[in-house]
Image 1 (cartoon, one colour):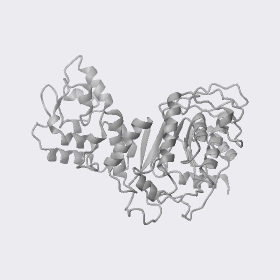
Image 2 (cartoon, helix red, strand yellow):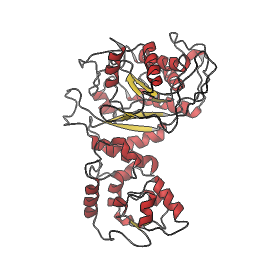
Image 3 (cartoon, one colour):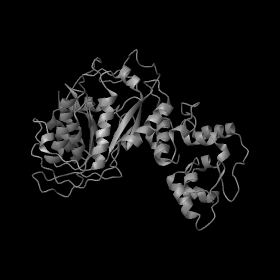
Length: 436
């Protein structure tokens, strides 16, 4: 099979893994004194973006090393029992492809995963070898994200973190029961064990590559470290992915697990992937299509956990296990706590402002700064960046309200859901950067 045929097949097979942000690591090419001249840069705010055929925003060559797989995960297009065409790169071929695409300005980095070909260790060694050859032989200083194969040895996981900017292990499902039912060859102890190892090595930041860690077949045993500016272990951290809609767990279970993983493993991101029905299986639900709106709401709730001081138990209470699909999670929380509103923007502290629908992190900071010099009114809030179509129900300026103070929650919810409409369906992660 020709390289371009492999590229088409293996890039298409990789599109269901969404855990590949390109931000969080700075790596500057300063012309290393090695045989390879060196090319490529990675910058912390992110790199040039392109769009996949399904509309998702990507900035990397996102590809599988191989779509051959010994596992039979019910939800996966590449599962062993699914009769799809199979292909695999070899290391030199993938290195050459990445270098060629970068020099043509098609991509700024690489996201590399794989089906399990042979065994977890055999597959992981191929991924690590590819990253090593890009760094040492090709002189590539751009962004690399490697996917850890569950069940790989700790030594190979450490090598992956040494050569890549970010590494990730997909937890896939919120419960051990669902993992066992839908991905019987994967074990939560392998996944969580790798995540714990990665966290430990990131925090110690002293991981080197002694000769004893390298498999005999992997030409790293000299123990020589390349002179890369970013030579820390996984400088862009680790992430994971949860499949949404293929298992029966509620949004509350998903968010509580997410909160625990952020605390326990210090993850940079948890990604949520709406289940796409790609194969028939009695273990899977019959969905008319991927639950994109639910995925979007989970991303918004995740944003509240990470940046707005919310707890999972606040976002979804015991009697409300699923997120409201008609209004965003912050609005939903505010409607259940109308007794805490309206908030006077000229007096409220920063943490309180963050809980107001329509007020984001930047606009809250600007409010705190601007009111030192003058009392704010609604026109000032609009100039600052507050989304008044949401905030107007929850704030006062100089004691005055735009909408009155006695509106019932049902009426406010109706207006908010009408304002939001259906335009946001499918926008996915882009909504994270709007004011929640």
